[in-house]
Length: 334
Image 1 (tube, one colour):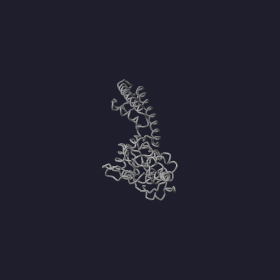
Image 2: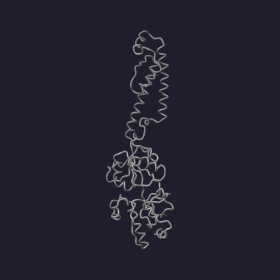
Image 3: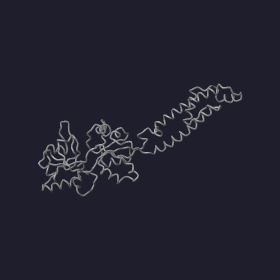
Image 4: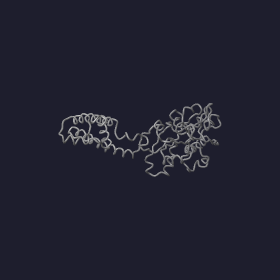
């Protein structure tokens, strides 16, 4: 029991979000005791149990290992480290602990400026602009060196006193594509055609790009789907007290939940639900407990963006009993 007051509310359905697995298993334990016609007494601990460096276990698992109790009254996850320390009884508690968070805006997890177009479109734009640059270089050289009437030449030289260089033409292309304008003014048909192509292309690309940007800025993302995605995401993480075993899940704890030199992010369900609502935050908790708080405190539109990631990826919790217990078959039958 993580909350001492749970002992007073095992059957009255009060505070269902506090120690829900313990409260769900209590009637089953009492049923088993009645079937065995046994007198039962309880020992209370605040942990399922963690293995220390010397191989001993704390919490409920440690009490079973030391044979201080006969059966564990709260379901626990089936993990390799506990095999041989306790025996599992195939009675599942249908619950699930997972990271729950609101869908973050796309702009918080991705480079929003590259998303409006696919990579192939960006490549096509680059090739097109390079082609226009080459055509512009040829047309401006032809324009400058080809003979023209004195009046036309004097008019053009007011705006273009010297021959356009490659860098000048590059600035024309950049100015057009960035909608910033440029100082060059073509006066021959070929260079005007090239410049008109550039301006029309820039106008269409700019309109498409800005429309997509506006849509993406208001969009949420579903790119966070796995524990690895969660580990490398910008979301801050918090959790109820829970044991993480494999490398990715241990990294989540060591890098995001309990980084060295900083205070750990272990907190209550109420605090976790509040931070999920107000921050870019993911909270690891038992689903039923956390959803109860969300149901009571969230607006309807805030519930729509909720996502969850099962980082444990385990079977539902099972009841546990001493290894080589004389009551094993009786309890299994019950």
